[in-house]
Length: 107
Image (tube, rainbow, N blue to C red; front, side, top):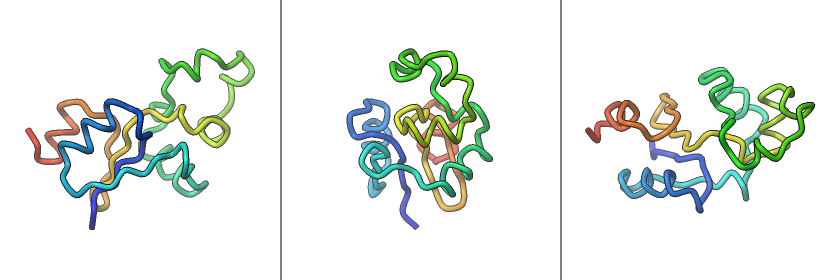
């Protein structure tokens, strides 16, 4: 089963992950947004950590929007998703820190 990297093609971190994982496929969530089932799966796996509260998009939201549930935020603003989310078989990984690289057998 191929590794799928959910992110955006202009994200430096997503590009690093793609380069380090030969054969991985990048799914650009800007051009192909997450389905409701995918959003639910990611929220179940990562909770509120799936929302990138350090992003430019987040800073542009008003207080009412910031108070929305993660599912509503990701549906309305796909780029609010913390990146990358990496699907390797049945496992999901968030981010590209050493712990994720180790779990994927790269470190």
